[in-house]
Length: 308
Ligand code: FMN
Image (cartoon, rainbow, N blue to C red; front, side, top):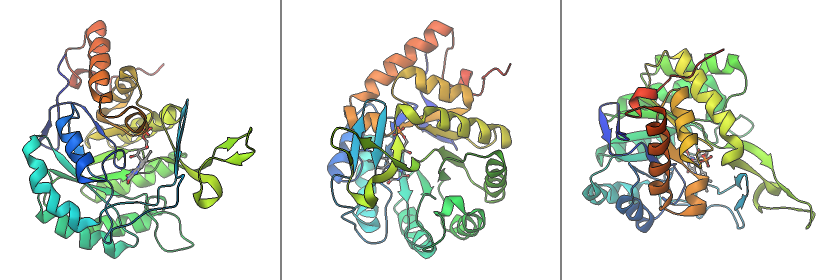
């Protein structure tokens, strides 16, 4: 079966790629993704200044998922802008993930990173906004204002990475924001925020920052991710391509994302846990699922989820 796909006119040699933040911070990690079977190279979400991130331990993996509070450790946008031309030699799309600690940061980074010509830009709205206000993605007015300001600065396809929503009204409101903002693709979902994992033996939290609170990833979040992919697919009538992210651990998980409407999938926790060999395994597993079900390509099963 054909596992290559196209998003916003850009061809991806495989529908599997890393999720922003998973083994994609340093030049060495980005080059390893380049040499791997990954269908794209997605950068760590970049901020204006380089950041060390939060104190360790700040990531903890357990059998059904992961929790993290990394604090956006990254090299700063100038380092990624310099690196992107060299990463082109790997002949796969490069997606620059843009973050910011305030709205104006996004504009500074978007302008400069756009000039370094990544193939696509993913604007990460799961970022802090004004203290006392929720992350930008949970503030529809702030999201719309930001996207309207950043859109004219970006000449490559612009995607938006959203946090999970848990209420149909929130899906509707954000789908309207996306519709009005001329967005070329969506990445859904970021980690399920502000969870708490407890180790009963040690009677303790498992990560150091924020008293143990952090974002969940991995198998346990798959139903939340699928719900968000499906909700936005339906609300936007399949007109905005979606990269499904959340709980893809086996090939069958990717197939479920595609049934819900995803064109491609990103791998976070499973990549952190398994390393870049995960891509070859996922391709093999998805190819077997598609072949067994008689689908000739990823494209042919997209959105085909049956309702009862
Ligand atoms: N998402 C972003 O948009 N930007 C980031 O910089 C980022 N850093 C992450 C770092 C780690 C260690 C992990 C585990 C996740 C990070 N995420 C980040 C969220 C992932 O991209 C992904 O949305 C989430 O983990 C769900 O996917 P999963 O179930 O495959 O882990």
